[in-house]
Length: 99
Image (cartoon, rainbow, N blue to C red; front, side, top):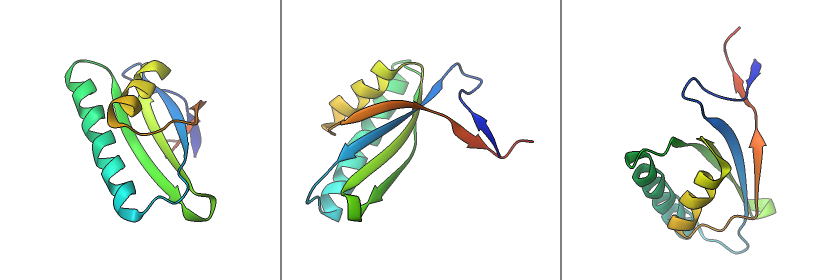
């Protein structure tokens, strides 16, 4: 696999880290639902953004979400609209199956 830092749409990958002590599965599901809705709303308004994937690490009380977006500010806006906390946003490189 080869790292991929951007897509053909001019987007870059960003990793969002959220520390979520004591979150329940139901609360996590609700946050993810609101986050996906915020991403759809922003994308519908023309902002290049996509939520690629999220992972919950219960032992660390951390949620990691990968986004593709044109700018870090767009990722932060999606999280703000959904009410999801953001502890850290970092540019990331996604792996690709392409040879």
